[in-house]
Length: 290
Ligand SMILES: [Zn+2]
Image (cartoon, rainbow, N blue to C red; front, side):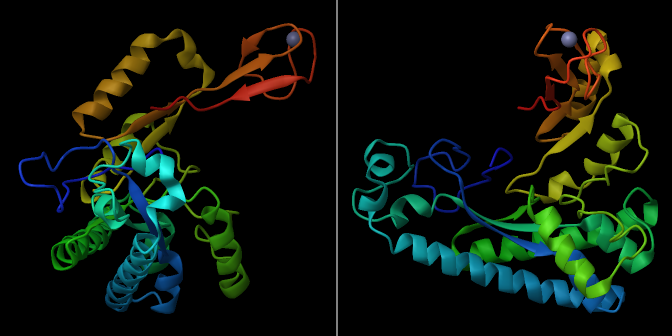
């Protein structure tokens, strides 16, 4: 996944840099659907924290089970990968010799909706942010403990959840129905993101999310959606990028609309129909990342 981040390698060979990124990656993410836990806790914050703690332990068990299964495979299963120096640490014998340098990503989805369920407001408010930090601190503390105890790179992951956003919501709705600002849409909010329907400026979005990205050491992303006006305003783009860097955002992306008429070549933001030749043969781009 593009947002994968590999923190310090607890299994780095002596004399090598534990921050090495090449040849390492996320091995297998597991994602905790937090809004469901908030409902199971009857909207009680302390009960939720207890349940979450238990769930984080279960997620760790699942990660280790998958890790062991992967390590039990023969290197022959991906010969090219192991024999061409693509995997850090491979000893020519076991998959584990390479896998132990990767990251076991312990992920989460729907912080915004979870906070709505628990206290009726999300982390765009000071009270919501306070509880958000408590939740993320628990993830961070537990992952640090597991990393030491199991000598594996278990880390906090802000899951992209491209499909899970929808499938998790479908199941949630079937069980709990429609709840205002929680399940009155088709998807849960990605990881710790500010909900896309919240009216905040790009700078405010960076201010809010940058307070939480530091808890994650297995990957996260912050992106902002811009309108077409920015196309001719490179200074504004540069200001945004600098602002995100100053706030220590590890991975920042900008979404800029770019519609191209495939018949006459006209480019702007116009969605379904070309304003010049009225063609409906349109290519739409929204994401510039990296
Ligand atoms: Zn056209």
